[in-house]
Image (cartoon, rainbow over all chains, first blue to last red; front, side):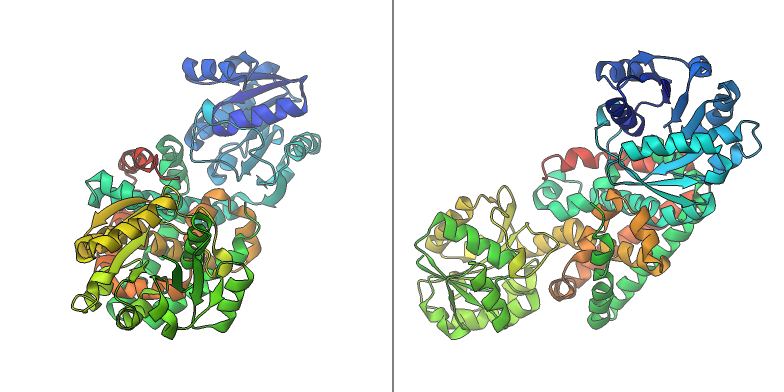
Length: 283
Length: 283
């Protein structure tokens, strides 16, 4: 794994670059991006050693694709077309079904490993990349049996070195579960932000009265629409299902309030307090 | 302000006790609680100097009431009945209309100051009390003109010493705005937690797939139902209004997804990203 090409040098790609290089200073990290300015920024930040283009991936030992999931679906088959037989291609997309599907019959399917590192912040771009982002975080690998055993091993060694815990799952199960614990959180946060902004035209009032609780709950509303729109598009059915359940729960809560059934309101919250125990392991 | 009586020695009362004592080691902090175990815990944690009962408040220079808002409405008139003429009574409730209303005609109304310090964590009880909780936080004071000028001054000196910024507001405006930036956040968080728990009966899956984004968005679902049920009850009309708007925004988002209008989805998120600038001043 000497020559590593990272397509998309933002939060995830850039953070992977930092830690892979730290663990193995001999590797050469080549950055690829649609935007020259992004590449220059990544170079200036020392995330990458060299700038490259898509045509260069034929020299790669490892290609990491960390771009919006719609772009991944388009680009992944081309990347597999171009690579040498011994190369490994990994994607870091937040959806897995469409990505796995687009290469299911590709002659180089066995060179590809589908992953989703459950790590990130609400920031994006090269300047958002940080060291240690993946320590103790879960990396979900899909359809591991479809990747050559030798390349699996190489990938796992990298993930282990950057501190990730591995879980295996099929793409459909991944997309279904992640809709609940990640995609829905983002929508609840975005719509909370929208509701408050719409109402409180005088922003000074929001600023003065909002505490750390509000800040925490709307944190994800800072996330990149460029990244999240294609995620919602690809995981449309699952996300709509979670949204319907969420809206039903909110509506029921509202109805209980209208009926002055505050005993039921109390119990709803008491039962959900149980999330404490579930979250205890999450940083 | 030698003898300070704090009714309710949990997160807010306990944190106030710590910082008031730190700034003025000569004061004697007396704790009052319905539960003997809570008082003993507060004593063991050095939050209070002495245990006291409600009958003792006739010896108070300052009484701080930091208990659930329904209990405050019941207790506040009695406390005002008991205090000496020079004493100041402050409440720290998260709603202000009912609390101000219950004492509007009380003969000692001018001894009372209604405040809402916008500070806290999702934890509760004496062990949740921390030093520095109020530094840089906003303290909303309602109906300041109804408090004797001398007692206003004393209160402001205390708030200043513990690092709070002061904003003045009438109780109705307070309750309306706070429904958006605080009460709605709590419900959105509780219902998000409920939706995910209901769906993911196998908790191991949640734990493994949930990242820091989910943890941040459901953090408030750890909050105390004992404290929050009476808040929702007292601020019922405003909270229902915010819930209706939130549900409408979520429903519209879901409909846009169903119609495959991902350009509109993108724009919704882009417009809400603006929350970044609004939040920049909040820790």
